Length: 80
Image (cartoon, rainbow, N blue to C red; front, top):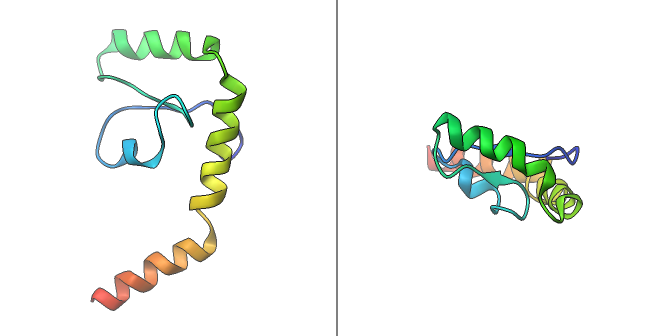
């Protein structure tokens, strides 16, 4: 995402919480091979693909900074 690369993820664990479907990438509806193939083939033709790529880059820049990482680690150690 940081390099404006198209992101297609499977709906597992907290992955779907890290971005908004069709705004900063794509979340598969399920994990069967037909669904995966359909999304991989169709995603590059999606309208607004440049905006989606830019939104993904912006999301990473805003949410995955070194300051955020330090904040998360600090909270973790305070809980212990």
